[in-house]
Image (tube, rainbow, N blue to C red; front, side, top):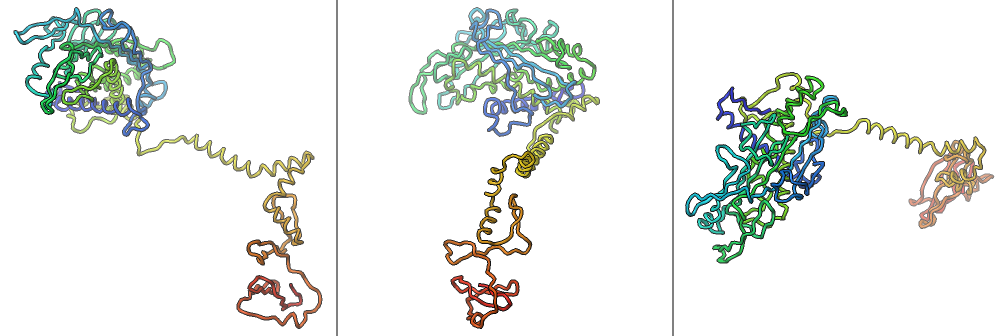
Length: 548
């Protein structure tokens, strides 16, 4: 797995490989989500190689209560997404016996924050000002974030709508806790108590639309753009009314939590509480049944952590590219956005996080590309870690899996059905005879068979001496002759009677026959038949017996 070790190589050398690798991994996850999470996995290409094309959240509440006391813009129209428990074997493809599997759960609660009472205008000069937002001190400042109030007009004066280059700006401020203390390297501000809460990591996403113009009024509480602006489009020499963001920036806060359940999974008390990721991961040792299980899960968590698949990592890495609205932004002009667009954004971040987590387990097994510096790679160090790398399930079009048991069941039952169909009639007949049942129906069934119908036709002509007439296959005596076709009327062919034997010596008249090239000769039983062109037999004798 990729895990920078700055003690073994220079910071610049490691980050030169690691940063692009991380950005590319999350970009791939974002593309995967657009194809397989939000589209139709059955018709999309490339929805693999995960054992499950997408992981679906078990609970999505779009009308959740405010998770930040009274600081939300609305009290009952907020967002809560919960994966429920995901199985390491069935959902992430980590192949292991049941006694070594674990469950993972992730929950995200988000809400747009009030700015009234938590923001203040700060004038830098007569024509320059900023809006400072106070949700907790950040860095060396007593405010969390500051955004310029002049970006829109600066861009308007520097360009025109024929060459507009404005874009969204996304700034992330996060706070991570471990054992009640902020983790310095993962914390950029110290939230106020209403936002911090208990047992969770929090982050605030500040969205600044800058010079972006909205072609329609946007009532979404995060993108909120209702201030009209009259713009001149120089390329077409026309004016239009567009809209800009109401404030310099708007804030969206989220709380993030994780939970793990250790094997045996059906035992109560084997789950950590739903809490801050760092706190939960440190509790794994306590809830693991043995050291081997603990070592397995710690290695997997470390592998996932290096690819930073948490929702705030997605935003921190992808920036404005993580916005769904960015796909409909063209040359700084934003098309229509629904009133709940921010909820679609939260769901997109959550899905990207899940896809990145799926991908992280596979990348741990397959290893990083050769372009990543060896100093940024941590190889498996023991048998437990090496076993995990060899037991990651990955779907592939090069192989096809099938159930041998299912195949054998189909084969056995198929053969049984064929055997029953072959012997059912004989078995029913045997039972009827043995029990003395009226066998008229059975005989009628047999007599209407193809072979029995042929027997009946031959017997009506007096041809053959037949046996087994009450079975499906009647037979004649050996060397008995059967009827031939009478083709006198080719539109109405019929059986011809067997030649009749005539007593007495042959006459001279019978042996004096004509012969021409149209006659047909058939030598059987020391004699032959002649037929003229119409098919009528001619009399001829070459033996003591005469045929007509």
